[in-house]
Length: 139
Image 1 (cartoon, rainbow, N blue to C red):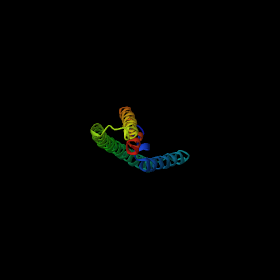
Image 2: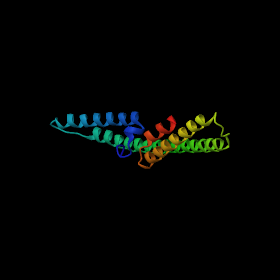
Image 3: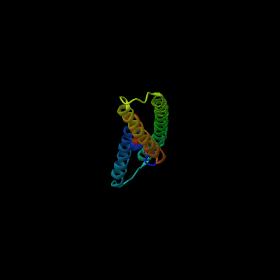
Image 4: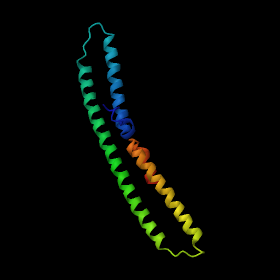
């Protein structure tokens, strides 16, 4: 459940602790297997606790992923607002010879940012949340 929720990406420390717990339980099971009179009572209890921990880790991963999606969406909204404001100011700016190069540079920057915003949206749509958020923050 935790792997399906991509816990290793979104809550890696919790996922690693879960993996350690599972490995410990599996080692205890193997040790108990080698005994003549086997008693798995402790191992079953530990495995049950580990299964509960896995559910918690999976839920935390889903929550973290959703938080990151919302943060990315908020960043994109802010960027879109700023781009719209910049376009308005660019349209109102004087069109003299002196400022033509600067205006073209600003327009090129806006076009570049629009392209990158589209890339962020594509990453969000393909569930690549971490890279989408990182790219959005970099803008």
